Image 1 (cartoon, rainbow, N blue to C red):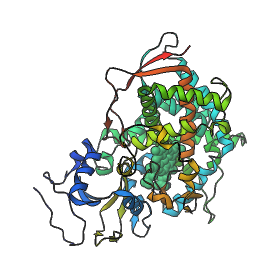
Image 2: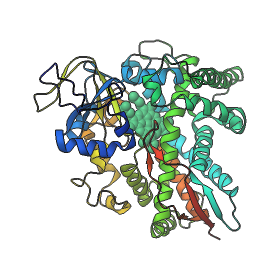
Image 3: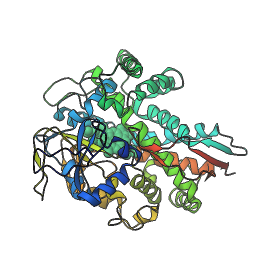
Amino acid sequence: IHQRINVDKNAPPEVPYWIPYLGSAIQFSVNPIKFYDDNRKKYGDIFTYTMVGRKFTVCLGVEGNNFVFNAKTADVSAEESYTPLTTPVFGKGVVYDCPNHMLMEQKKFVKWGMSNDAFRAYVSEIEEETRTYFERWNNKVGGRADLFTAMAELIINTASRTLMGPEIRSLMDESVAQVYHDLDDGFQPINMFFQWLPLPSYARRDRAHVKMRNIFMKVIEERRANNITDKTDMLQSLMNQTYKDGTPFTDVDACHLMIALLMAGQHTSSTTATWALLFLAENPELVKELRAEQKDVLGSDDAPLNFDMMKNMTLLDNVIRETLRLRPPIIMILRKVIRPIAYTGTDYVIPKGNYIAASPIATQVDEQYYKNAMKFDAHRWDSISTEESTTEGMVDYGFGKIASGGARNPNLPFGAGRHRCIGESFAYVQLKTIISTFVRMYDVSLTEKGMPGSDFTKMFVQPVLPVDIDYKPRK
Ligand code: HEM
């Protein structure tokens, strides 16, 4: 066994490995949850493992989550961890290709585009997209369909109709879908490690980046030329921003940030929608309860959906919350250590150059916090109000107040601290509308293959493909 002797006696324990360089990459990507569990029993909540020549110090438990999410920018850097992967896809000057304070301002620009007024308009648009999409299924007798593909297409249609604007939506069935696909292919974990390889997918990715930017740029130019200012979408709100110190946020920056949002919201939401419907297929009683909730809240289960009233659909909220507890699409959050950093409450000092990793999925499936932790039970959240889980310890990092004292919350599918997700409310609006509309139209059941397993080799964890589902029209 290849066991590196710690140069620094205070460095956290290291997981031994057989294959130099590759380290534990294979065990980790087959099943990271088991990998953490096994090693946690041997080493405790904090230990280091090697993958593809890099050292990852994972910090488990609620204290570990808090340590990573609230680490100081003087000690750790998200930019240095993610930039090889994200900059070629998003483009320069935004997100991880700029100083952290600029990202904080960009997140504020994005938040402005996610107001309740915008959401009010989005709900009926998403409802219409969903209905139109699923009317293409066999709505006379039912059948079997690939749910994952359907959700991926539907999320891109709804996100482009709402956040990206009607011009982009109208191009969706033609050129943009292919460009998106090529760009997305450039968003693989492997690209974090081998950015210098002359892979054909890198050339496709780079071409796709330019095409995507040009698509957004053309829309911006047309809106400016025609003095169009009445749009509620994200693109419009990004077209009118300036940094606090007067630095302009250019149209190119706006295009790059739009690409980043497209990437951040697409897989996260489409896998969540897929898992949620799979759990519903497994729990037909819950589907009946959701329809009853729609009747309670809206007066009937075929009245138009409405943003303000949907706030009272708490069971639906809890279905999504429980889906994200068990199947969070992001299972590893990274920061690169830029100066040695002591781990709170221990003698450990994490060396410069390591990555620290948070994996909130570990606490999300921990029996200590959730009884029958591996069981899907939307009702476990009945007594916990949304208020309670989001208002504790509000902190303002510069892009609006967010729940950060809550970094010790065992359930953190959207992260915590300064890098916390700003897309959570949009994701809930989108998922709630899609699921409500879907359960009005169809009954679903699992095929003989049952529940799919998870594929952990992707950037965003997804079900093992293909995900077939049996469906029957309701009426
Ligand atoms: C950050 C999860 C949807 C935009 C994050 C982070 C997580 C996350 C875990 C923290 C990353 C880190 O700390 O390194 C999710 C999940 C989603 C979702 C589970 C859906 C179910 C969205 C959507 C958007 C979005 C729809 C935009 C429209 C962002 C942005 C960040 C972020 C801009 C900030 C990155 C940073 O500050 O470093 N998300 N997200 N997300 N997300 Fe989401």
